[in-house]
Amino acid sequence: MVTVSMVSYPPESAVEMTKRFFKLSPVPDFVTVVGPYTITELEGGIQAITIYKYDKAKAGEANEVIANAHMTFYGVAGYRYSLKLAAGAATSAKMVGLK
Image 1 (cartoon, rainbow, N blue to C red):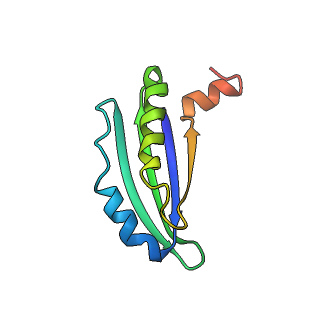
Image 2 (tube, helix red, strand yellow):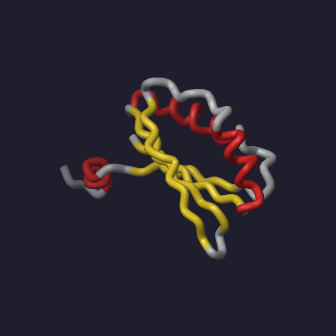
Image 3 (cartoon, one colour):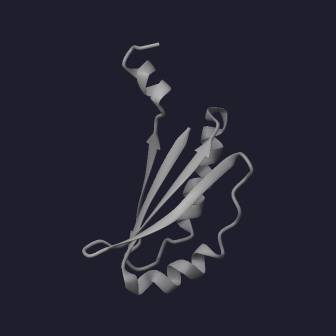
């Protein structure tokens, strides 16, 4: 399974975001992290995309780990985030009735 994290914050919060990022606890071995990749936008400030991969059997634990990581940034001015569960091609095919 895959969860995609989308984060945004204003440039004025970049130093505080970076300080807190380096204080994050490592994720357990059953979660693979790709990113974060940072994007700067003219109107959206700084955005970061991170992909978390994990086995379906560990989904509950993985989601708790991911949510707790984002709580590290609560209180940073302008911090916003979204977590999206993404389905792979095989799962999407099953959802529309294909085998």
